[in-house]
Image (cartoon, rainbow, N blue to C red; front, side, top):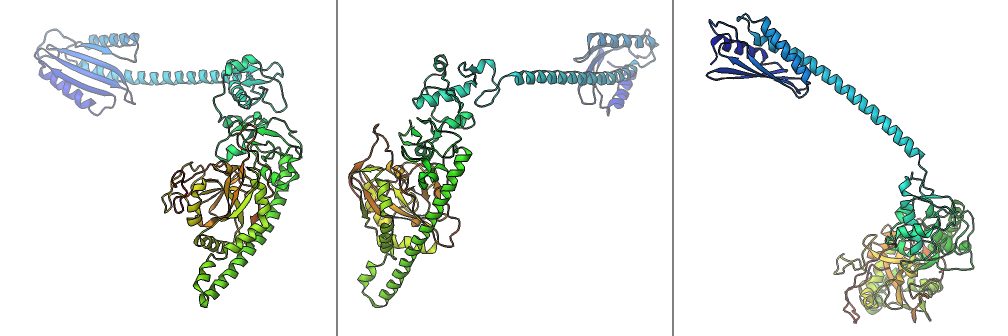
Length: 584
């Protein structure tokens, strides 16, 4: 066990290094010896050296004959073997020098090792900083080499991305270079459109070799527009307006090309492989072979909605023509709306007179707020336009019948017309005829708003009554199961959302059915799919003087999906059952 001098020395060392950040002491004693441990750390707390001492009983013993130095061992994960050997030899020299037996060697060793470890920590820090600096220099050098290698790579002629050799396709016929992503997109669009696969650059018609096509495989992805839209290939395709109105971006390759820099353009045939719609790839209009795209104002309006946009010169010309069309429509719409309000005011005065003494039966008959007179005026001024639009989707003679609308529904619309001095436009609404009875009784309703109706076909552009512009009867045709659809009036308030060729009305009071258009059959194309609609005259827009914020239906982007709420039992027409309210 420890003698008194050993105990005093250990206690003094413990007190000396108790508050030291660089040395931690511990010791224990037994019957034969005393063990002391010391850990030397850097300022950051990282262990530099570990010392283990064993004090024999004769160390510092009273009356001891020969001096017995402590036994020690050194361990370190940071110092080299030669450094440990140097420290060990120096400690032995110190022990021999102070070997008189009266000298307390532990304090000498600890203070000297503490200083050595501080120096070692500084050296280790400097070494690490030098290594980090060299590592950064190597990284900078490697980065510079990689950048140089990347800059040396050729660009994809279509998307301008650097192309590595393994992802590179070189078209020998034209010399253009394509990346793997562009090759896949170009091949798929051509194959889906059933066209020979050619170079994607607008001015190039070089064919892509068969061995390249074999590596791409069969087309699987129809939603590749996000990839095509940022490349030069987008100038060779156009988005199908039918799919676009339903929220789907289908890139279609025109069957005929047009002069990309021209100001005027002729018919450019397109046939959508997804929905079957036939349309002009320049103005998005129904087929008009032999006629220039901008020879009619309504085609110019549709052309301004094209995706991707037309070339600048052509787009500017289309916008000028569309502005003329909008101005004419707004003026005519203003006159129609003023006439409708004049009729409503006359009817209100008539009802007031009836209320003062006329028969109650006559009051009930005229209790629609002037709706019937407004409907007659609209039929007189727009019947030819409505029939022309319906002839594109229905075959045979077109019959236009006034719907037997509930007076309460008509009066509700007239009150909304009086309260909102805005445009009024005609639109189509396609649905199952089994729902007509409920629609005429309760009006066009929005599913879930105080009624039992449910959305059937989805609502890609929000809840509301989905209608189609007067020049897009084909859009409502997609939701008809018989050759009949409704002609509606829509107030152009803030409750109406314009999406490409559709209007979504979020307030049921701002839309009302006026007529039922009936044909002998559906008009279909040669493939038996969606009809190619004959071009309709300009859309009648009704606008009131002093209106604000009414967005023209010819200038809004977006897509069209439809929601349909069907509550009538199969095969049976319900007079007061659920109605179809969100189809177009």
